[in-house]
Length: 456
Image (cartoon, rainbow, N blue to C red; front, top):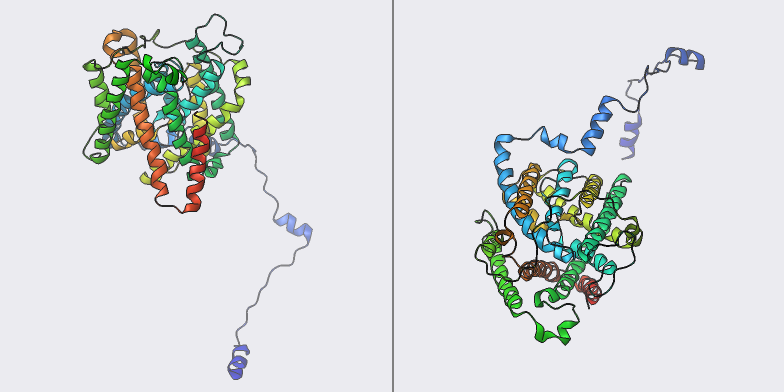
């Protein structure tokens, strides 16, 4: 081995020669003089184009839109999703403790802005039950059911419903400001710190809170405490209606899950029309829309000062839910989404919607699933959705309320919401528990019990 090593170290007779001129500093600077651009600018055409594509993602995907292949699917998807949005908007507004028709505004105004600014092609923007519940908690804190409202500037001479709408809109506007600010400072990564354990526990506890807080409407008692002291005064018609609706919605939901590949449109949409057509529900206390669209309003600064602590977690939860759903469909359909741009899109959408008295908007997994399963390809579906919602708002305003709204009662809507939310929460809680270690089960149940205890 030594002889072999010596042989490898011997020169082979070949040489490698490097020659270069010798420079002084002056001669080098003279020959390689720095090139100075004639015009310096931070806004050239390339940067302007990139900025436009970043802030308006619609420019990027609209120019590659395949009209012949995608348009029909987007139209069908937009109409189907719009029908679901009508039902959920009416129902989830009750969780926010405001009149039901404002749920239609939530399903309409934020969608218009997201069409231009959003990066996801498949999520459906609108009301989300957990956000509605969080907004409702803030609303009832400032304008309680069984007591005078908090002394707030601008509440003089307004009814309870009007006061609550102003509170919900102001909280939503502040939520949008937080989301926009977080997007501008590029902190979209914050959603990475919301673990599956936290989301599962929070969602399940929220479902319990929804169930407990809505019992007074199903039983038609004034407050939750009356359930224990005046249970004999329960409205039997509303109670029977609620139980029937719960059973039917649960059965239909199971059929949807079992035969989802064969159903072009989820059955609950058809059930909603049947509910109206045959007048099977009684005592619906929702009036016809007072006007088609209400005039824009500025947020109440007094309310904003009082609700800053509540608005920030609403902003985070709303973005986290929307981004999680968007990420699922982005991976499935192989395209990219931008977390910071999503924050900006939802921030501007909520600020714009709040000026027209809508409440907090995010996305719902069930609505997005309908959008994707019915063939939606892009956010062109959102434009169809908006046109469809506009037609519904016109119908609620112009037509006889007995044909459109009165056949659906508050108890029926809330029963449908309770079934959808509770079954979703059970899936969140029980399915992961079957697959994870005991060390992860304890935190899930800990979050669940802590959050659920706040319901009572």
